[in-house]
Length: 524
Image 1 (cartoon, rainbow, N blue to C red):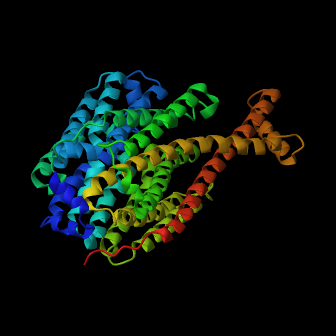
Image 2 (tube, rainbow, N blue to C red):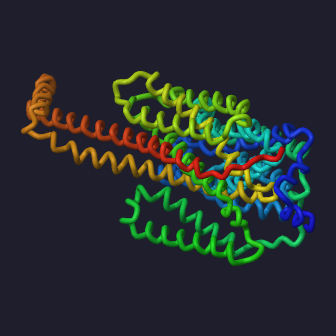
């Protein structure tokens, strides 16, 4: 314990004495564990209707299969520093992988919705420790001048996995059955746990510490805060947000618990997390940028398949195929970053990435229903390039001035906020589609009038065509209803386009924050 205290007081450059001889050995199990954890966040989305049918559950009830996983992982993520001190970081990491793997097997064996939700909670609890610890290990194992390449490879798993998750999940569900989206984790999880036990570098400051006490009060406030917040985001749109009394109560409880959690972490000793990292300007700015980017990523992943399937008539496979260029763009950008990230100012890379993301959002915001598949693939590829060029360097920038001793705590807090960003993005975009659609429908419905010559002409021509098969009065009613259906489709199209444009503008607005980063010279 005394050794750790000494390390905290030492200059940051002394962290270099705790580097492994070959850092890539530690990278193998961490990258494998991260990939199976991240991909599991989206792979179940496409199989949700199949699972709901198997459990005789409604669509709203089946959403708890996704929500329970996010809640459990969200609670564990900021607690990783505490559990790492209590059990030893390497031990906690292996336990997390094993719990995630066992829970994955149990999810595939679930016989009803209650069992599935319980096992998904266990799976989220196990997976919650994987991502922040993996990020901390990758950051610590490499000297600062080589972290760019390391985080480029690490970032490939974080960015590409959510994109290929729905495609892989759809293929497995169509060709095998939905339990296999969970069973497929078992062999890879076992391999990751074994390799982690054998290969992970274990510096002195990550060992088990004596005298660590459980912050029960902080953990209670954290659980209530995130549980209520996730329910608020998941159910808010369907309940018309604050027009529903129970939503107002849930939001109020969440805010109160969140405030109590942060106050308890500031005024009490032996707390769950160390909030002193928020004194670091680079960490705060980098986290803000990552939260917004995470919201844009998950929001776009949520609505683009809906646009392609509902508006363009694409099949599930074809919509996934149209989005694959985004993954190709991500891999291309991360490979480029691996070679130039340590030679070029990271702020320039992030700036270029955000510009590409914004450009792709604006391009998607000017599409229409008379487009070919290539019109979807090109902006998706550009968006993938932007993600790859911005996500990886911004992680490095945000952690550049954080000491290795604080790395696990910092990555836990950062990933907690990114999780919240994902929930906000997914929920808000659903509301945006609903509200924008209503707005455009209100603006256009006045055009469906006998005073509009274009409307009258279309109704008359459609009525004449339908009158050959039914009575003239019925034909006219069907013609008018057809024009109203066209209006609804047009208003929905504009709602999608407005949402994509907002994504683009948000990315452009993040660029000025890059000039506020504090320059840091790595140790030679």
